[in-house]
Length: 153
Image: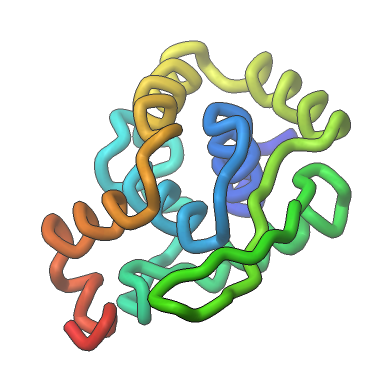
């Protein structure tokens, strides 16, 4: 399969889901992909998605569309749940790979150079247990231009 932009977008989301085991919410997916593109040590995914400043910092409509496509294809499963923040209930989903998604990741791991896989893994895995609030705080501080619409910033 050729290395198209769409394939790179699919690969990055599937690899994030793989190395995270479970991603709690679309916002966390957005921030992880943003940080991987900006700070990851691989050029292979440096420009996979276009991000703009939005309500919770960097946002990519392309990423949302690709995630919806992967869910629609049954490669990533959403697990809806309700959480309460500042006294308000909100519905969100955590995302994890399906069996078919795991098989797709096995093919990606074979196809991509080992150093690219290692670079992504070494960047993503340390963030597995970081709460979204800490990731957002880091993004707002390090990339203030992407936080101009975040919580009145």
